[in-house]
Length: 203
Image 1: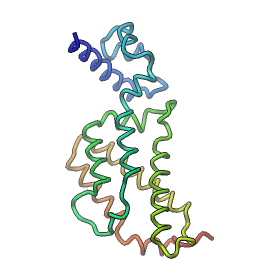
Image 2: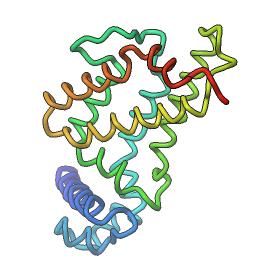
Image 3: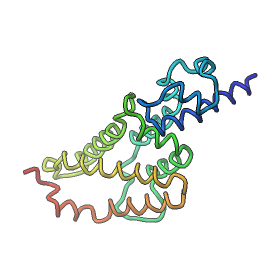
Image 4: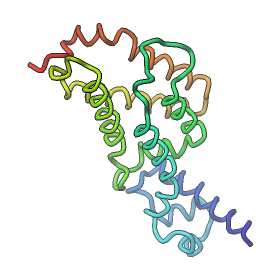
């Protein structure tokens, strides 16, 4: 009986992912999920009270893992030296994108109307604040740093990482290749780049 229950839940889960990916959270209905999963709608309601709970079931683990990854990123371990191995922070993105490709896409592309719709901005804020705190502790010129520009860079960086993960989640070799390539480009010679764009000037 327990096995049967798991089978039904998995059918609902798989069907719901397809509907959320195709229609987004706002456009998804329990009727459409029932049709896609081939599970009677009355039976779906035995497991999930509404589509919000079902959406939570699909994205919450990924949401929590990505947020944890950002909160616990160790900036002091990051150097400007590039190599062929992704840093721990990027490696976790790779593992999550490869293991949960559909969930990854749904979380970032189909969550309008849910509590997750501003998740990208949330990640940018976490990493931006962490970076600014790091610079404040380690930079003698912190008072001249343009914080708004830092946040623009952070959004650009995180958005690019997520876009690469979505595009290459079905090919781990290419995913790893482009994340390492992007990371090297983003970090290499960064001090000189900052000077070129008046990084330390707010006026």
